Length: 319
Image 1 (cartoon, helix red, strand yellow):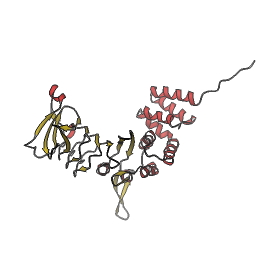
Image 2 (cartoon, rainbow, N blue to C red):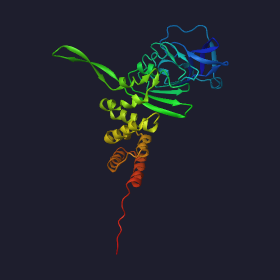
Image 3 (cartoon, rainbow, N blue to C red):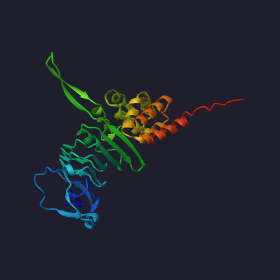
């Protein structure tokens, strides 16, 4: 890849990126100086004027394998990985990045410019490396977006992580015709979940306590991903909330199993076994669903689970 950059106070600010891949990985250092800023409109194709004064840095692979090169901005960007040296990103940095789906950064990133995520309607995954404590800029990012966002917090020093789902939310103006009054109707529990931060720190207890709200407002697929994400990676998960997630999985197993089969989520089907959630009725339903949808790998696994958990009694004939 090739980067346009400038130097300020012995630190690097990235201005533009060029390459042939939809995945952009920014360097950690250039000329022995840390990459600490990414300028306004860096990944936007709505920039009015290009910089006239800049330096150029080319990665080793770009030097050795020169191919078709283009400006990585707008629709040509799907994933961006910031190094843990980046502390600030500029105004409208992702403006118009309609295909941006994944963003990875560290808790060193504390300053986000205004309008940074304008037009990023497909952004759905954040991966955050927590290296300096418990605070991050995730709340600010979520506040700018209405769609469902899956966030993975990686706690480096502890070697643990948390996988959280923040559901979508939107407002709808509904008219009460006889009274000629407009009122706002809220859909989804996403707004509630976006309030689960205190002073930029994730409040896991509050997040888990909202599951009953999500159960009333969100679809089974969202609930399944929320519950199984917390069960698979139980960072700061209390026993009471763990039981609440498991109870919902058992109570709405038909909807959830159907969703997992349609999406071919073999990894999450296995979590039913890992947390001893199966009963005979649930397992039979899952076997039937896997058979109808032609999920042969899952079907084989479930048959083995049935044999282990609910083996048939052998009849003994005495002469």
